[in-house]
Image (tube, rainbow, N blue to C red; front, top):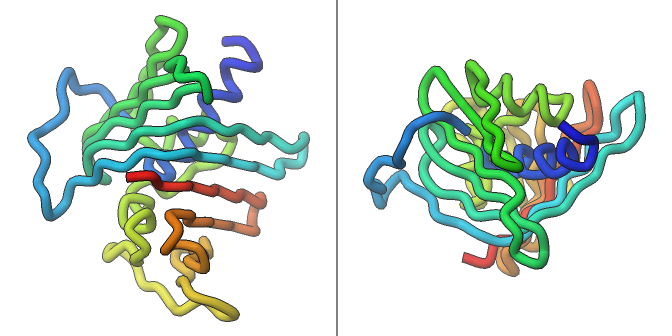
Length: 179
């Protein structure tokens, strides 16, 4: 895969952050109490020791933390990558090629250099803590801290959610949710 192709993958996978990927031929019927359908813009920045990696993409996220699909596109609408996931597998298709992974964590770690909590991002995009782990209120503003990530909700009413982690490698995910 080319370096620029890998950058687009990395951006989208962080979004899965916002929402995380895998191989089923179709998505399950949405459960309105659990399913998420969101779209908007995503920016991911990883401050790795080997250098800063930063990407932006338009995203469309469908499904749930355990089963879903993330589509990433350029600002002009060209589809860059489609990632799908379900229990026990994840895959991403870009430039006509499919890459399989054992899990969403493996996929995000390979493409971003860091594992992203996609399972939690589904709740974080709804401006609430993930019920699978304890959380505490964020100091200095609206939001919360969960699993080492700070979810900033200062501008959530405008559709912008910012998620940051400082260690072991600083990562910032910004998602502007349109729908």
